Image (cartoon, rainbow, N blue to C red; front, side, top):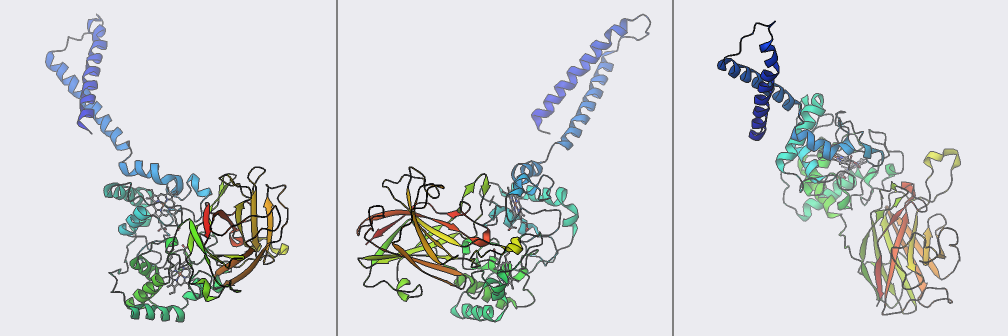
Length: 491
Ligand code: HEC
Ligand code: HEC
């Protein structure tokens, strides 16, 4: 008890003792009673007894006062993990993957063998750094080390004491050996020979043959192999040591098993270095120069594309009718070129499964809509911002929409849901899907076709944004990913 609180209790104790004496005063003078007035020493005794009683109550109350760990847990963690840690917080209705039930004993991010609870260091790491790409936030910059430890002790001792009674035998996660080209090369060979590609795909984009199935985690939710080329999506964090930990311990409760006994320690470091080496370098920007070239290539695989400068654009889920979308496609790479009369804009994105949207009504559960990507330009300048999905009466958009359903483009003036289809024909597409990656080139005459067509001029900047529907993620129409406004300049 704080000193000031103690003084307060003492004061209450004294005053209630005097009250007691005052109340009993009439009785003292009641002729039917034979009490004698208490001697000064007796009053003193009564005061002390009352004080002790109050102190006792106070200390009992103190035991019921929530600990700091509990207060912090209830304030910060319970919305998702639930007030009793059962993973049934209010927010868990909306988020995927769901927040963990700490009482189940099944944990994904740890250094211990399958079935064992995580160590303190594991719990601290996740609490401080979060799980990127999921709803689990990093608390490292907001909480002191002591506070983190108090929350963790609360989880271990009060929320799931039975789970944390179990003994743990953590794997050894040492420091990485030095990076060398040989290590990376041996990692590449191990990856190619092993079963990693069955799930993560030949190039690591999460598009292995097992990805297009019915992979579920232990919580019965659909799960996909990680796109290992997207470092920013790694939930179990992204240093070489983090990746080594994922390979060594696996992610319990998911199809990602522990490889501690399949590969030697040196081999697991080699794999980790190789995976680090295939991550793409993300160049986030909002402006791209569309270069002037001699000739526009006729295929997505033409080496001319590789030499171009590109921009990586972050894709965000849109919030529609209170439903928040967590996109599986998080990045679109944009680049372009023109030859003076035609321009070609290429978008590239990783997608684990190619969805054509062919209807299979006999099995509605496995039906997935088609993958769609659309470039949007303001048809009337200034176009206004933010843009409404497919335009509205005021913000009229020029939309070039490519769909995997028929591998072709519909080009229309977006005036909102009802009147959005004034078909035009000036944009053509070339597309490919290989090793979990789409490339779609939009090719158009720079010159406008007719009055209603978008006008582009060499030497000027243009604003656009992108809408994307990932069929695998059941995205359709309004329900999809979007980018902020971007710009390109025709060189
Ligand atoms: C906004 C929701 C949200 C809040 C708030 C939240 N978490 Fe989480 N947490 C999650 C999600 C979602 C996961 C699971 C991620 C996954 O499975 O990939 C998770 C996972 C974890 C894990 C890893 C469990 C495992 O399987 O290894 C720990 C530990 C954890 N959270 C602790 C905390 C603590 C401590 C707090 C409060 C300080 C907290 N979380 C607050 C959503 C949340
Ligand atoms: C049976 C399918 C399967 C196989 C085989 C497999 N993985 Fe995984 N792996 C997964 C899944 C699914 C996840 C994602 C778990 C999640 O989303 O929480 C994953 C996650 C990972 C992660 C962690 C990603 C993160 O978010 O931090 C790494 C690293 C990884 N795998 C590497 C490998 C390597 C290396 C191999 C081969 C030695 C391999 N995997 C074999 C299915 C597999």
